[in-house]
Length: 147
Ligand SMILES: [Zn+2]
Image 1 (cartoon, rainbow, N blue to C red):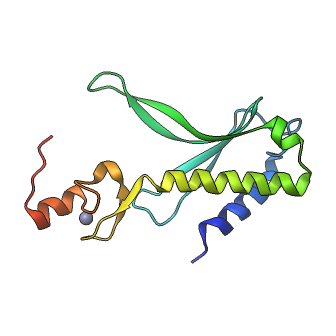
Image 2 (cartoon, rainbow, N blue to C red):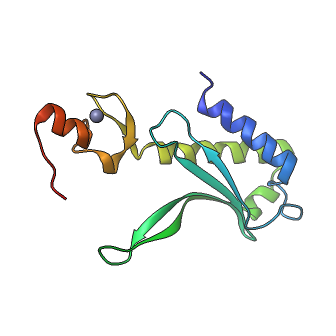
Image 3 (tube, helix red, strand yellow):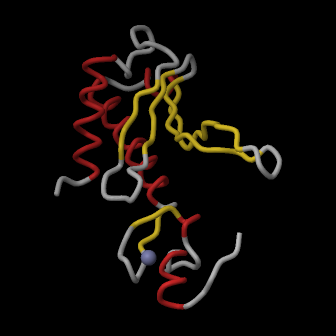
């Protein structure tokens, strides 16, 4: 299986070629470039967006505005300023973008856990504790979670 790192390298290389994400002048601002992280239950996704200030990585999530109203929002997990990028040459710039992107993927991956019963990798909110998902807690441990 292709490692996440090599997928990131491939993806960043393509975004630089197609969308000039490493260029303050030529990149299109506020366009969300999406990257799927494979091997997890719901194929989590992170995005890269180019802004006036630099590059930002994050993902879509919800904040709860009151008990029953989820509001879609974007959480930024890493960023890289044009000041930093412009001080580097073309190769260094690409390496730096890849480095930050791998960190962003890692931080998203850390929200996922593997269940010791069904072996699925799911988001931590679907877990009963650190090792057992809610469904397996019911099936294997006889624990019923009431919402
Ligand atoms: Zn499970």
